[in-house]
Length: 410
Ligand code: ZN
Image (tube, rainbow, N blue to C red; front, side, top):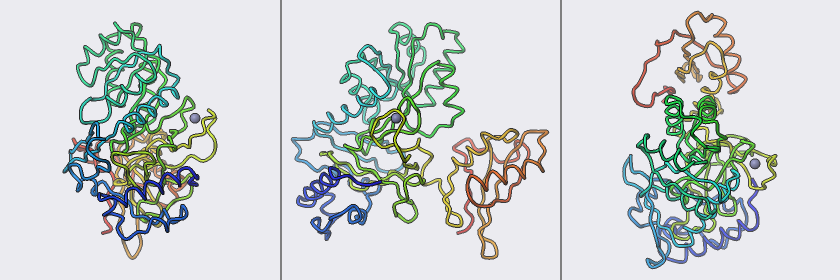
């Protein structure tokens, strides 16, 4: 995707500012002459910023403005290792709310809506972001936060919530509770705004059907404001990203080179206006692709696909990147195949060999399944795999996130 002139100017100004003062980027970009960056190609030679760099800057090493300009911090959950702390200026907080309001408008919300917010409040960016955007729009906020399903459903009925903001798993839980209690006719929800975790088409359909709502995907990450930097529209064909606030690239996660529009890769973000903690070429580890062309909704902001997974889950075989989500998708539309599979890559006699073990329904013709899955795999992924249909329950189960891809080459 082509960087536009405004983006280039903003990036250059930002680089000048960051390298002319002591701090995170002055050290990271030491030895790079900002004035020699004359084009998008020059910019693409700058080093990436990694989550690990941000962790090392704990607690406030990312801060790029004087103390008196910082009005708030947020932090990414430190489930693994040191958390990342992101300082915000008053302008950052305002910009984030502006983007978030845009998201709500894209979903058709008006000041008459009642926005039921279930994501958490606190160090995490979610709840407060949903709230600030809704208030800026003029809608009524119901700041529930997570948990306490009884109370959620009571408030939802008594206050006639029209919009549910939630993670996909919590939305599904609420949808199932509503069905179980038979209170569907007392619920006024029209729309669901769902945080951008990876979720399958089957889950999406269930939530939409059970709640009787239109669903929208919202995208974001704590390191770059929080949720609200991108949003799906009523055409549900990917998410529009607010490219006047962020510049984004899709790169091959293995080589770091940009991939052509439409091809899958890792989303890399550069902030254009952020003051408290600007980021240059930040590796999000989210896998997606640019959706080329104009959206039927007419909104000019460029689109990325729904997040297809994390780069940590990706493997490269014979020059082709393979993502578990592609295999999920392939199997989800195939009668007779269950959702459980294991994908193995071995290196034998100088060649990479892929084997896909798939659990198939009892009574399914394994021989026929082998042929069908083999054909579909080749068509979808682009390389050949040995297909081994097995019985339901044959593959190991795990209580934690199950490992489905085994790369035995190294
Ligand atoms: Zn659109």
